[in-house]
Image (cartoon, rainbow, N blue to C red; front, side, top):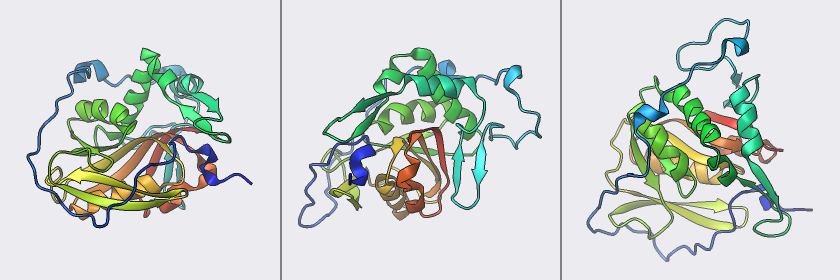
Length: 256
């Protein structure tokens, strides 16, 4: 029988936990994102009239294409007739046996090659979060760094990178977590978020949910309120949503 890791898009971590995790002090530097488009280029596009459903309109900030389940706190844009979602699905490539035999790798680099599909992906997230008073978008290394910054710029929030160990130059707070193949760790700069700030966690994919759970713990330890987690792809068979401490999960595409 294959391990649960056969569907994960992340290769096994090489992280070896230190003997003790402690804060280290050094100067914190700020890195701008000059490669990102200005917020104007990420304006929200309205849904086509031909795709409107004959149901009462959802409250502001919610899409009429969403499916809600109170039992598992899952929200999805993929359960409906939305041509943008259909197009995004076709742009995600599945690579068998990568990075090792048995793994079906969900490759979003082919999505990034299509400017319209990439913009539609960002727009769908922006449409959902623009009115939710979110001040922090926390992106998980590494592919969360692709989707997180443009979302943050478009909704007027700051972007906070959650990185692997020894990648951030300043004083950090760390969170270890267990994966099906070992242990790993996320770190965040001390002072990156303030108490009571409303945070959104962004990554490309949720599989077993261990990384998202660590991100939630890290932000909550810093005093932030995690409003929701957002991913492009979910592997629902691995039930990662059940590890998210009851936090809502919003996804665009399901991969089985």
